[in-house]
Length: 369
Ligand SMILES: *Cc1c(COP(=O)(O)O)cnc(C)c1O
Image 1 (cartoon, helix red, strand yellow):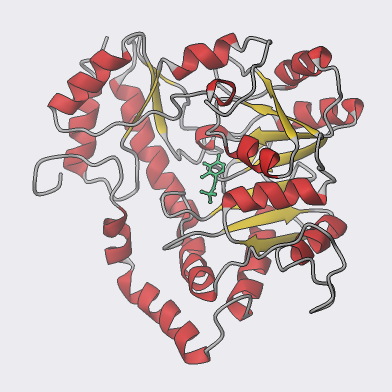
Image 2 (image 1 turned 30 degrees about the vertical axis):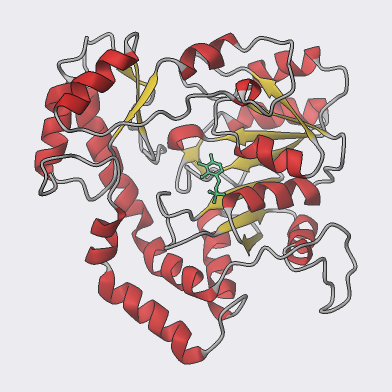
């Protein structure tokens, strides 16, 4: 617990203070070198990420949302392109698609996992009047979607797949890392992600060298080579060297940190054993435990109960994409998505939680129905 006796939803200062010497050294290295954007730290991190996920390429960009947008562009998204995605995953894929004039269309999710499946994608696809060119599959909360079935479906449907791995670096499906299945994948290094920077950053991963080359050009004005604008639609979406250096110091610890998250998640699972309130996921080795998400009939009651004990909570996510004020009316209903948006509740889960905090959270969630 913090000094005030409150358990914060997240406390990034705890991690940075424990790693302070390494972070200072990484930043010092960049300052001494005097090369601040798209330099050797970027190049090294790109290689390390590609090796981690098993893709041929990784291209660093300015954020996870940019990664989604640039991946869509590289896969041929243009004004009017239909992008099939989930409406319960924070809205990032919808925002990226709209930036390009593409049209997000939503598939519902599985009621157990809250993930897209080949079945939910196929049923949304069957209702579309214009076929989608791209599907974005989010490995929500750090749990891997069934990419074997989804890639089978996508091949039959002629759809290109982007995996959104912003919450799921280190997650596995059928023994292989997420991000290695789709035509491209997006990562985010936003500070709260399992592998976070001290600011913004992101990456596009691909096993297709042509996709990576296009993203590399688009992230820097469409240049190819320098000062020659060869691809239209380019912009500035570089990641800076200090962020890349910090992420590099953290990457070797990712698996240990994910295991620590899973440990904490398992303790919450035990506390809820036999209750109606459930955790959406169970902590198997392929799950990154980015978030611990309860599903409950009485969310306001649960928020009140936890908040009375000083435990902060959050909701991921309260407003499905098709219900956002900016969304055009969509006729198709998304009953599972809508029901989940009223029932999910995230409780604190980060590696630096103390034993006392974990125990308190376990005790209090154990008092829920
Ligand atoms: C955080 C997140 C993003 C966006 O990443 P930013 O770096 O914040 O732009 C995209 N998708 C998911 C699932 C995320 O959790």
